Length: 362
Image (cartoon, rainbow, N blue to C red; front, side, top):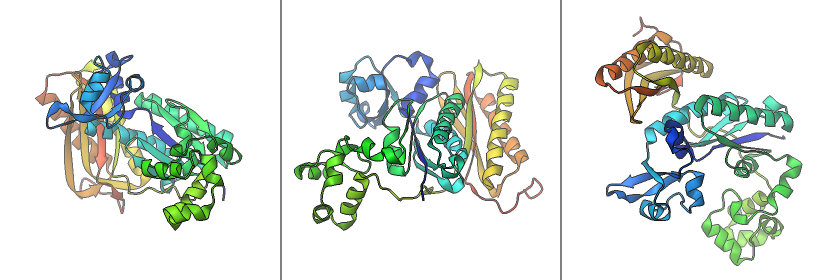
């Protein structure tokens, strides 16, 4: 059966979030580092924006080396919990555009597959419209960009999303697959690592076209039956693997910025109410309940802080969400005098609903 698959890949995700949070970073090289216990002299680059990449800075590069390549770059520590909050919001946008709950597959914090075969009725022009809609929803709701690849399977969609980065969209129809793959270096084929690339080079194979034409029995003799057959099939654009979530998403969240940095309670609680409406709507749509509520605040000094409440039983009641989120937000207001920049609410420890718990049940 013919399928239509979308792969969405966020553009330099961590660094893009930092640029969004601090507009003064625009136009500068931004490097997000995972520092070691030796402080800023140790650790490695987690990600960087394209300005930093143009200076030769790459993921996993020692931070010390990165600083020598671009001394005037802005180096920031990883804020993993914050990035996960943003990821949860992005993934809910992507999930809502898939054919069904089962037609969504998150593969990392910043990328996912979704099947849209039914939604577009195998019409690639309509598929492109869906891809453009996803890009616009991510940009309008989260103020960051993503690149989208659309193809007849996961392999082609994944490779297509990298074709026009950043902020691009590439559509590869089934009849275009061969021409799309043929000229590519074999290392660009999704799933081929450095060891495999080197072995193929020893065999005189450097392009996908050469790999597709190579005798499958010789590939099997070198790589074994499973991998040899996979290499042959992948080089021809074949991939029958289903889009299926590997592990159930365990949280639903939404974040948004205040109109301006403030401690105005009316402004804060009005925005919080909007976010809770969105979250509870997704809870109902996915037919799940939750056992925890988390509220996140990004302060005007860009510090991130979270507070959580865990329940004895799973619930899906709007009143319970409101009562606990408001209580946690009030604690933030009581404990700090710094203005709020951005707030978020998230429910976690999800499970399929078996009947809604009420306040009386609590």
